[in-house]
Image 1 (spheres, rainbow, N blue to C red):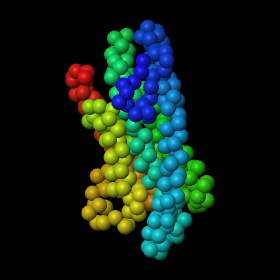
Image 2 (cartoon, rainbow, N blue to C red):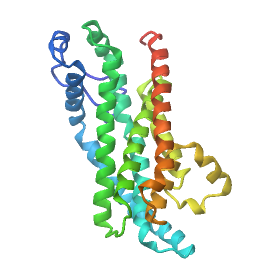
Image 3 (cartoon, rainbow, N blue to C red):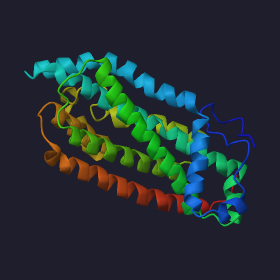
Image 4 (cartoon, one colour):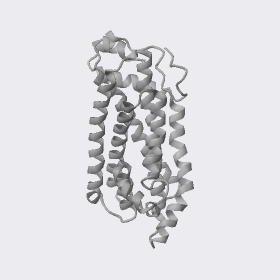
Length: 281
């Protein structure tokens, strides 16, 4: 089964042998089987996934001097600049990576694979959840790779409280995945979703101090940035690496991210339910 020619090369194409409905029904856990299937599909797009993990390191190297300049202007040590630059790239490429989720869902719609699986007893909830699980796994590995490898390459030291890093980054990955579900619900086609993913990533990172230091943004931009989930992640990271706060101190940021995640999944579920009432085109 092949994808429509309009899809980009980043489309996650199905395996040569699709999971049959009887096999799904006879398994002890349909959701676990679907997750394994989606994981195999994701493995076929290994090259763009690697590219999306390497390019953030290259971009962080370019924007790091701007963060160092902003810290020096405030009389602070510039050692945190590397982590600030890397965190911004986690936001940017985590958001861009949502195209994998969008193409997976839209390809199943276009090829009617989801209809065939549902006719065999698979629920829509299981189909969507399996894709979200694989997407969340990708987000976690991307964030871990960029932050760990980036800190080693840049020779960054004194990262601050490790627990705060882990919890903040995990909360961001969950929130980013939820935003992907909302974007799918708002889009009619894979091309439209790709536009939303790329455009949204720029808003999330540039509008909240991920590409340029937050202190250099105009006042109105800093005010509006609070409406974006990425604001709470990046400001939490700033607090950890600059002000040396601990996990206890960043719980408000974590709570804000988790609230965005819950709201995103809820809104996305409603939008997806609305889309189901529309006929296939």
